[in-house]
Amino acid sequence: MDLLDYIEKGGVIVYILIFLNFIGFTIILWKFFTIPRKNSMLKKIKNKIDLTHLKTLEIQIEYEVKKLESGLTYIKNIASVAPLLGLLGTVYGVYKAFEEITQKGLGDPTIFSGGISIALITTIAGLIVAIPHLIAYNYFISVIDSIELKAKKEFLN
Image (tube, rainbow, N blue to C red):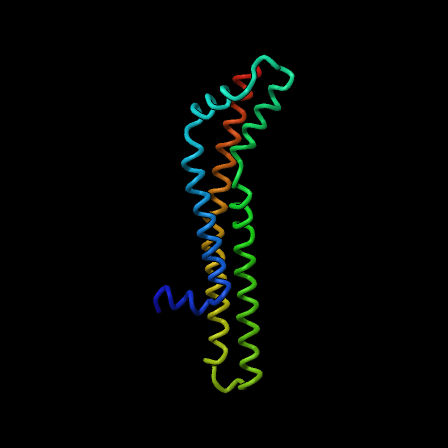
């Protein structure tokens, strides 16, 4: 069986996961190009904040850093929802398998295997989508946190 057969066998849930994967990886690529090296981000933050208002300096830094986090919520949500969609496909596949057994009996074990196949395909697809999105989200949050700490250390002291 080739990849397209697995996708077709997984059904609507796999198509939804592919769509989410496309959206997520688009955001991930955008973030890789918009969050360059720390020093250049610090220069951008320094150019945007008003160093004369020391009382609001920390708020200004946090505001600029918060703008760097745009889009990350989508990545986080995809990482959270993808395994749940895989689980939904699992439940649907097992339900379908039991429905077939109810209609045709237990005489032929291949009746049960079709539903279990759907269950496994959707579970695998959900995990394949979730894992890289979770890794990317954690990476970007780590980079942005270090930019924020460095900015606060540099501008507040």
